[in-house]
Length: 181
Length: 256
Image 1 (cartoon, rainbow over the protein chains, first blue to last red):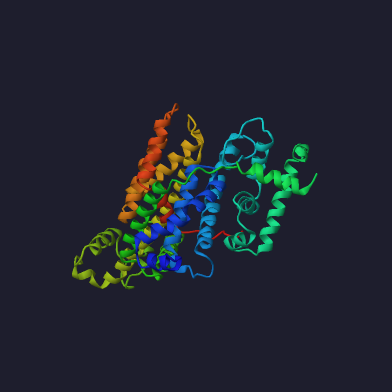
Image 2: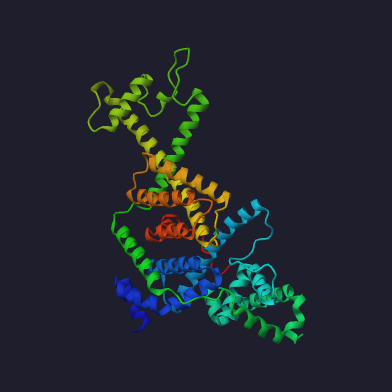
């Protein structure tokens, strides 16, 4: 069925249409949420919240972009807000424990190899760069899609990716020989 | 070193970064459907008009102003009579402008105002002013209660979100336990407050209280079963989604 018809059915209160719309998009949204959160519970919370908000605000969707793009926009917003709260809370804990720098959302081994070092560097990227990096280099979104989701020009998406890569290169400088060989 | 080789390396190595498992479609849908059903039910209920919040805010400010006035002019919150026998400062607020009421009579009248048709004839001319004061107090209490409730719910949301996100450790951090205890205390105060008449909020606070008690009672050697039980309580009662629905939305951040 055409997505616009599905949306019209959802707006008329058809719960089965809601389920079909959910089925069409849940996998991709969940993947991105998981990549951003690195935690199963958080990824589920963000995905769930994104769909609830999107269905609740469906009347605001004007059809200027694809529904998937709009849904991703809601989801990324939910995830960024959620991660900010988690990090704020954790950073307070870390300060109190004097445990050094705040690590990412997943636990890593103490002696980092190149891959682990890369993951830590990704964790430490500023959030706007990290989102673009994850969407483009990891999940394969185009700059056009990313721009639409984040509501920024395509050029901004490209610039953020370039800065993200530059930071990663800097963080991995000590391993330079490994990817050259 | 070549730029292309670095990009190629990063792309390859980053594929394992936060590698997602398969989406738990059915479990997620069950929670979404439940939350949507609750939203529909809420939407079907009569709602306060948009000016209501402004009204409550203004009433709270008015009540605050009166309170400050009492404290600064009268020297006490209960309207203490001055030695010279002049009128009580509180009695001048909202009354008809003739004789001030003694504190005991005023309190008795306030009680009667709360009951329909309970005013004696002699005090009928003062009814309007007293009713205004009583309604103002009630509105102010309601507004203060709401602010406290939203603050507590926001703290609880941050706490539970973080608790769920924590790696499953054997013992809970003492700082987290202390914070949980604080939130639990405020939750209980809100539950005990007569201002908390909102049945939906009350149900949420009761469920929240249960989860917080479970977290506080986690023993030093918490087993995975205990942690799972807490997770189950949160999921079954939809505590986090309900908290998020109850907290007013913050500014959008997409595109930042």
